[in-house]
Structures are given as C-alpha cells and as structure tokens.
Image (cartoon, rainbow, N blue to C red):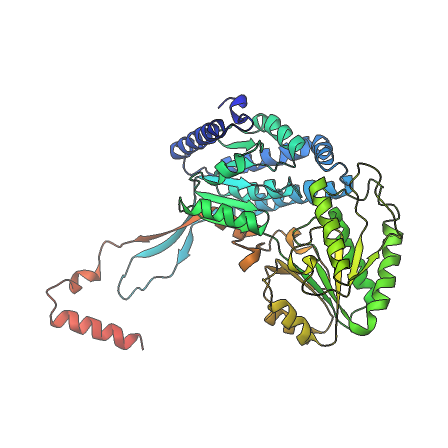
Length: 484
C-alpha cells in the first residue's frame, strides 16, 4: 500500500472506509500467506520496533511537545521512550519461551498414548486505538506484544497527537512494510470507522464512555476487545505510615504529566486528625519541586477544552462548599501555555463533579477518615478503580485492603509504578476495563492459545461404541470406581 493511501481525506467517510478496509484486506491477505512467523522473524520485527523509537527519540520528543504545547522532556523520556525500549527488551528476552508449545495433562486411562498440547499462534490483524496522554507508550507497548505474538497491526492515533501521528506515518515505512504495520491519523471520522472493522482483536485505551462505543462497534463483528479505561484510583495513607514519605510519592504521581494519567491518584484518604498537616506539608513539597508552573518541567493541559473542563470542576466544587487549596500560592499560567496550578480540594461531597467523574488533571480531593472500614465502604460503593494505592507498613492492614478492595492493579506504598513492571499484567476490572497486556499475559492476549489433542494409534474408545453391552458397562464402572 502506498504511503499516500494511509491518509484518508479529511471529513470524507467514504474515503476513510475505503482506505481502512483496503489496509485491513491487504494485511489479512499477507497474514494468510504467512500465518505463523518464526522466532527469528518476530525477533527481527521487535528489533525494528525498538530502532523506530530509539533512532527517532529526539524527533518523537519534539512532536509530543508540540502536541501538548509543553510536555516535560524528562517525562517523555521516562514514560514514553525508556519504558517502551525496556519493554521491548523484556519481550525479546522471553519470546522464545513464550512461543514454546505447552504440554498439558491427559487422562491416560481412556486415551493411552494420546497427548495434549497448547500451541500459541497469531490471531491475524490487530487494531489499536491510542489516546493522547502517552501516545508512544500506549501504542508501542501493545505493539510489542502484538508483534511478539506474530500478528500484523493497524494503529489509529488520537486527534490530539497530530504532529506525532504524521511523524509516525512518515517513519513507519522505513522500518515495516505497510502489510505488517500501518499508522493512521484522526481526521474526523477515522476512529468510528476504525472500530467497525472486523479485526481479529481490537485494543483500546481511553475513557469509559468511548470504550462502551468501541465495544458496541466491535460486537457487531464479534471482534474480541481489550479495553484499558480509566477510573477514580484512590490512595489511602494509614496512621502508621510516615506522612512526609507518602506525600512525596503521591504528589510525584499526581503531578506527573500534570495528572493526565489513567493510573494517577484521583483522590486520597488522610487520617482525620492529620489533614491540616497533610495540606501544609503538601504545599511545602510542591513549593520545592514545582516552584514555577510555567517552567518546561511542568506539563501543559492537552487542549483548551480539557483546561476548561478542569476549571469547571474546581468552580463546581467551590459552589458546593469545597475549600480549594492552590498549592503554588496563586500562580497563574502564562498566556497560551494552558498550565493549571495543582490543587487540593477539601470538604468534598457526593454532588460535586470531581467526586462523580475521573479528574484527569492536577486536582486532588482529600477525604478524611477514622477507620479503614470507612475507606473500604467508600471505594466499594463506586465503580472498581483501575489502580489502588494503600500506604501502610502493617502487613495485616495491607492484606485487609488487598482482600476487600477490588481494582485493576495495586501499588503498595507508592503510586504509578506498577504499569512499568513488565512482568506484571496490566489491565482494569469492571468499569476500569477488561483484558490484560504486558508480560506473558500480553503475548497471550494477542495469541490464540490453540488446544490440540493428538490421538494415539490405538484408541480404547473402540470398546465403547454402540451397541452397548457388558464390556462397555464393565469399562465405565471401572472408570467410575477409579475416579472416586
């Protein structure tokens, strides 16, 4: 497919449909001609994916910065470039083992000499829909496991990643033929048409509302989906845990990418008698680590619509009786920079928007509590979060929370770090998503773990064929006795 064919005409649904359908048809034809790439080919493809990121590290960083208006270069290197390269290295290290045929047990009494195997095989063509907040990590990490599993991929980027999308569309043919990997820019209706394609698997990262629409579209084709959604991920600071250390770790996570992270700390439970201390120490931490919100180190809100939404959340909370604490002593954004000062929100109540919806910005409600059961009841009355962050050194209390609070993942005594552990599966539960990727689970998600039964030359089932008589009765009775 020529490079120009991967650019649907803006706002032309027929052009979008034709281009996407043509790419899928060509990739599927290529898959059918070579349905099971060997280890050597998959290794080469993973190395090409790694080179695509590492060779173009600086241009990728610049493109993401342009899309954001200002994206901290250090955050891009840490959360996009380093995480992706490290993840590919992890997959390369383990790929040969993942690809091995698995032995499974068999009932030798009925099937003597037969054997069971599970053979991991590629699904075919996988569609990936990418959000704007970590556009390299959230495209290349699933791509790592899609390619490791031997598949081909079509990737639809976000409308807020214009510069990066065009860069990847330009770069990709230097590393992969379009029959193996193609990127698409959002030009108005691409996402809708993309989700309606009969992929062999569809992977989506984004909001719950859009995830429902994607799943509904995929259902029409019975396309299996992995949905990585968001949710209101809580942290709880227990009385036994050092408050200063908890603040350091929670605020690092909360201000990373200006809070525009699906696993960011959405709100925090603080012991009732330590709320004032928490506020003062948090102010001090922010004053030391974020003295100027207009610094390049503090990331912009992605667009004006998102900034307006966050300001509305603050205004709504204040109207309903909340106390807003600007942690930067009243700093304001420079014109056109879309910087939102980090805020704590005290005296929150259920009617506030920030309690009802994922915040996705540098705003953190503080909820006082006296007893761990209060924390448990509050969280469990709401949708299951994507992440949960208990801060306690008490093993019994850790177990109390782990056993009774269901979430997609957990990070004990820190926040934000568990998705970067490549051997841990990552995924949501309930409203925060379905399915897993990362590690072996990522390889398995994009593989058909195909069960194969190999019959022996001799089969005892010949003695169980009708008409049934004494021999069949004796055999079945013997089996039943042995199964007791």
